[in-house]
Length: 316
Image (cartoon, rainbow, N blue to C red; front, top):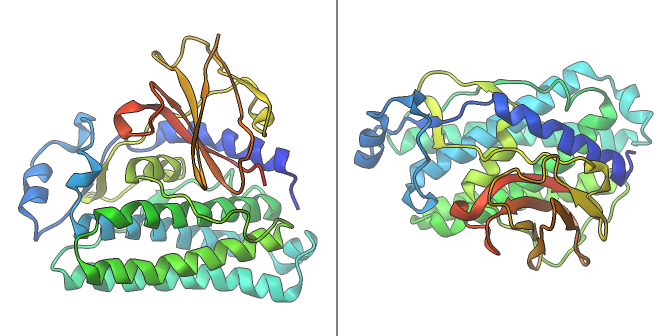
C-alpha cells in the first residue's frame, strides 16, 4: 500500500484541478422562496456564496447528494477500470476486495435514498456532474488512497452540516448515512495498513471547505444541478511531500495568497495554527488521522478568514 509520503504528494497534486471546477454552483429548489430569489441571479457572475447558515434543509440534502453522486461514480469508474488482480497485487484479500466493492454499492444506495428524500420534499434533485478522476484512478493503489480520503471527507461533511439542519427527520436521515461513511473509512484505513480509529473524534468541515475538496474532481454540472457554493483557491506549496508532523512547509510564492498569516490544521480534538514567516510554516505535533490544512488570515477557520485550501494531509 502507498506510504504516507506518497499519499500526501498525491493529494496535494490533485488540488490544482479545483481551478478548472465551476466557480459557482447553484441549487435548484422549487419549494423555497430564498432559493427562488437566488436562482434569479446569473450563475456565471462568480459572486461569493451566501453564508453556510443560510442553507435550508433541502439545500443540505442537495449538497449531500452532490457528494454521494461523486463518490458513487468514483467507485463505478474505478471498478470498471481495475480488475480484482490489481487490488490483490496491493495485498488486499478477496474478502477485502469484496468489501471495497460493497462500499461503492452502498454509495449508490445513498444516492437513491437522497433522490427520494429530496423529491419527497417537493424539490428537483441535483443530477450527477461530469467528473475528472484521471489522477485519482491512475492505478489501483491511487484509487484506494483516494477512497480513504473521500470517505474521511464524507464523514466531515455530514458532521459539519449537522448544526445547520433544522428538521429532526433530516438530521436522523443524515446520521444513518454518516455512521456508514465512518465504517467505510475505518475499513479502507485497515486495508491500507493504517490504524482504523486514529483519534477519539472525527472532524467537522463546513460546506464550502468540503466543496473545495470535491471541486477538484468536477468538470461541469448539468444546468440547474449546481450548488450555491464557491470553492476556495487551492494551496500551492514548494514541498508538499514534506507535509508531515514537525516539518517545515514552504508556500510556492511567499507573497501569495495575499494576507496569509497562518497555516491552519483542522484536526480531531481541535484546530492548530502555525504562524507563517517568510512564506514558511511548521506542521504542528499531535496530529492524527486525516487533517485538513488551510491558509488563513487569522487564528480562525471561518469562511471569511480562509484564503486557500483545504488540502488533506495524513500524519497517521
